Length: 451
Ligand code: TRP
Image (spheres, protein in one colour):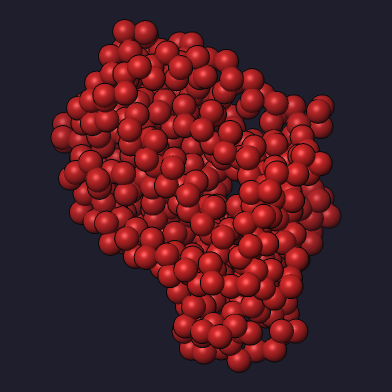
């Protein structure tokens, strides 16, 4: 038996896990859904979801990983026993990784393309009216989407090939400080814009009339997505921890960082929008249409645009790494393959599954034809399936298993090991037993239209 790989340091783990959490979900998705849901009230509900539902599930995932020293499928096999139905939770995680990474890579590809465009000076020279058709043509181009999809998956594979401490951890140590610095530069710019005050009011002014049930449920689903939960990514990263590592403190740090970055991203984007008198509710096009349009009109935009799109690429890359690592690690654990063989096969398969998403805008087959049958193109249906069904189901399974099925002695012992925050045990278990499952079931009832 080969010895299980471990992180080189505690900081390395925190950076890698924060890298997984901080992604397109924070910079691309959180600001636009906040905009669509009217700001303040949505932000408050999101914060409650993150700390009362997300954080307990994160602790549970990392704990299962560290206890079993295994990727999701083998973890449930070890805990619940050979032949147990719980093992399907592990498989669900592997399937989710395929579904999410295959369309995530397409959005990452747009970020790469816009980084390239802004570095070559092709963003700031455009007229305002040209940005919508530009994004439309990028979305519709099979060549561009397939090309950047290939580049992005190859980059992700290159990091995962290096292994846990020499690949994932090393790159997280390089990319995360860069990401935080770029964020800070943009935030300073945001704070000096005239729209900053309006943005603060939009984000933190509490307007109860904007609070809706649909918004609350979207907030919960997004909390799972943003914290990388429900898929076994945190479980897999946790499996590279040693028993004396502190799960509770690390989870709090990761959660605070992830939430801080999502809010910071909004405090960059909304001041830019409001300064140009643009609307907050822009939908998914916000980052690829309105923001480049604003950069083109803003002093210093030519310098800031590549920083912003580069930031998106780095954020997407460290998240994609964690998704590929789930599949790779499952192949290594389950089939005894070498890391090289496992990475090449996992990456290759994910590349293939991503092709229909890459062609969603450019071909009738995966665009309008599919849309006529199920009402969404391939790309959108993958996002819908993963965020509304697969991740909450995975999170529900992990919460119920940990709170109701796991051996109390093992659970208690592993929660306490390595942490000074031992008093949190009772509260954690209570949330995991009751609040977490109830909230997730509400999401399902909403998704099938019952509430
Ligand atoms: N959290 C990442 C983001 O916000 C996406 C992500 C990475 C993810 N790994 C995951 C989502 C695992 C769900 C499960 O962009």
